[in-house]
Every structure is written in structure tokens, then in C-alpha cells.
View 1 (cartoon, rainbow, N blue to C red):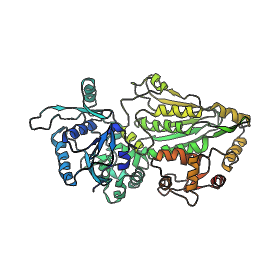
View 2 (cartoon, rainbow, N blue to C red; view 1 turned 135 degrees about the vertical axis):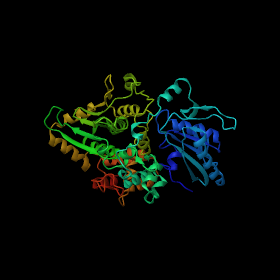
View 3 (cartoon, one colour; view 1 turned 90 degrees about the vertical axis):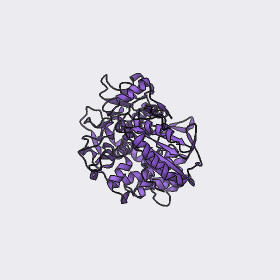
Length: 527
């Protein structure tokens, strides 16, 4: 079966690991009228989520797929795909053509229809496909349902005419050769797309169109901005100051001494590299022992999960037409993440402070789509709630979310954990040599972090030989990359028990992870 054209793996799609359920619809059998209306709704992309997927041949119950699939008769596929092409010409205005991909899944043949957000919305479709049907309506998605756009929804949809988010626009200052085949291949391997195995034999125009990172007329195709942001080694050439600046002030921002590091490159790489730099150098765990009980309190000056979510949100929601970096400022008292511009005016500061911010519009729908596939974000306005949950679990002070009346910027301020500060002051941490001695104590195991069951399992897997991230994850029988990193890999690396085999090239496709000497000692104690 031809499986080209899907940017994510079937496993991720069917199990909802990279796509929200409102971007998925399952059909037990082929119903051209119902499929047409949903294609129209995904093309209209009312919430700027990036379109969606229709899976034909799988029954659903309460929005969830019922497996094993019912399947389709393979002899029907050619006729169905021709009908989809005909519907795109004759039953949708303006013309719109999704990509349909036959897939063999659990022994059955299913058809996956990928309907990216259209570029000439609003779209409308025939209400009835009978010969006498001549009524047309605009369709949109409301949660997991396809409905006719009416009243205020219709007015809002019409107002979106020819409005395409910046990251989904063609870049006429670039050429297809500016897209890196190596970066595309790495991405497809990471998300488990079957396209990865064949991408090296395909022309760049074919790859770009199938991944929806390029388009335009066949005689003059152009990459889209999202393609250059994700799959060019130097996107700052096309979008100046696309970078993350991490600045550390050991005393205070007014002091003469500071450390600064810039991170440039593809968006997903700079997110991971900047987070790794912050985690290695500025996130410290404090262990407080109590004379009246055996269990010690363990806390972080800043919880990594909160910093990660705020960083990803800054890259996701910033404007790439504004020439300002995402800036991270770290002092002994706080960690601040600043991006431009601020949130949509429809979101009140009271909602943000309460963790109830829900946006109807996403500035960069395609960036969000790719970051979800890499499991770097969930989307759907969950970021602030995740930040506050991580802060509460660490016992840290509440974060501060700040913008101005013009929504020209957005700032997230994380105060340092007060017990972390007091503990450091109590043992003389204001002196640089004491800080260094304490950090070395962590590395040598004199002050050991918590050896959880998950970390122990990872250490055992790595005992005999270095392994790649995917191999180690499979050895632990884990499916979710985010869960593996958060509960297994990141804690082990933060404590110095696991290290990269190529620390200077953290995104290398041949990167592996191995036990350190300290990690072996920790494991010996557990065995």
C-alpha cells in the first residue's frame, strides 16, 4: 500500500499522541456526503489548528477509535480516491483537494484523508450530493463535530477570508533548495512517519507538498515559512532574530558580571538546546534532611517542567515578524521568560492568572502542529495550567504572568524556591567556590538525588552498552517520548548519572546515551 503523504505515524494518529481529537474523525464506511462536509470544515480551519484527518474504515464510539478496524474492501479504494478528487472539483468552492492515503493496519485496509487548512477560506460545500441538490453551506468544526457555520460563527469565518497565519504562508524570497533533506529526514524518523524510509528517493518538491511545507504553482513552487523555520539550518536568515537568548546574572541585573548564550537554528532544536543548557547549568536540587524522619525533602530552585512549558509557549506564540528574541533572564532570585507580542486581546489577565486562558486564535498554527508531533506541546491552551501544576508540585511560589494594555509583550516570572535560597545561604553558597563544591558533590554522589524506579530501570537498560533514545525507550516498553524524557532520561541526566555520547551535537541522528561512573555506582547500590 502507498503510505506516502502522511506527516506522522499511523500509531500516533490513531492513539491521539500528536493530534487533538477535534482534528480527527473516524468513519466506519465510506459516506461521501459526510466526508465532504468534514473536509470542508477542516479546510476552513476555524480555530487555526492546522486542519485535520478523516480515517475511513474504523468505527468510533464517543470520538475514540474501536479497534481492530472494520476495514474497507481494497477493490473500493481506487473508486473512493477518484470520488474524493471529483468532490474537490465539483462539491467544494473554491476547489480543494485533500491527500488520501491507503494504509494496512492490524490486517485491514483503511483510508486516511489528510485535509490541511486551506489557503483561500472560507470554503463551502454542497449540503446534499443528490442530482437535485443545489444548496451550499460553510462547515466548521465544533469540538469533535462537523456543523454548519451560522450567525456569529459565519460572520467570523467570512472575516478570515484570505487570512493565512504567517507560518503557513509561501516565502517568495526562498527556494526549495533552502529546505534541508537531512533535517526533514531526522524529523520524520523521530515522529515515526513511514515517509522517512522513502524521502531520500523523492524530489524536494514532492516531499514539500506531501508535508505541506511547500506549495504554489508547479512552475514556481516555494517553501512555506514553517518549512524554513523547522527545516533550514539558519532560519534567522529569513526571519531575523529568530533565536533564544539565555542571560545569567550571578549577582543581579545591575552587576558587571553576566553570562550570555544565544541559540539559533531550527525551532525544535533551539528549544531543546536552550532547555538543556538551562537544566545543566542553572537548575539545582536542594535536599533538606530532618532529624525526626527518614525521608528528606527534595526541591528544585525552579521546576524543569514549568520552565519547559513556558519556553515552548514562547516559541509557539511569538511573532516572527517582530525582530526580538525570546529572552531568558536568570538571577539568584528569579527566572524570567520574555517574548513578543503578548496574548490575544480576547484573553483577560484575570483568566491568565487563574490558568483559564482559552484562545480562539493561534498565531502560528503550523508551528503548533509540528511541536505537537514532536511531543513538545499539547496545544489547546493547556500551557498555563501545566506551569501552575508543576510549580505547585515543587512547592514554589506562584509564577507571575505579565503583559501591557497594548499586548506588546508577554512575560513569565518564576520566583526561586525560598527554601532553596535559605538552604544555600545556610551553607555559605554566596561564595562561588562553595557553589562549585556543592555542584561537584552532586556529580560525585556525595549528595545524591532521588533514584526513582523509572531512573533505576533506565540505568539497568544502559548498563551493558550506550543506546539511542528510541532504542532505550523500546527496551523499557514505552510509547510516549515525552513521558520517557520527563520521568526517565531527563532526571538521570540532571543528576549526572547518564550522559550523551556526543555532547557537542545533542541533536545528532547517531546520538546515544551511556552510564557515567557515578551512574554505575548508583546502580551497584540498587542491585
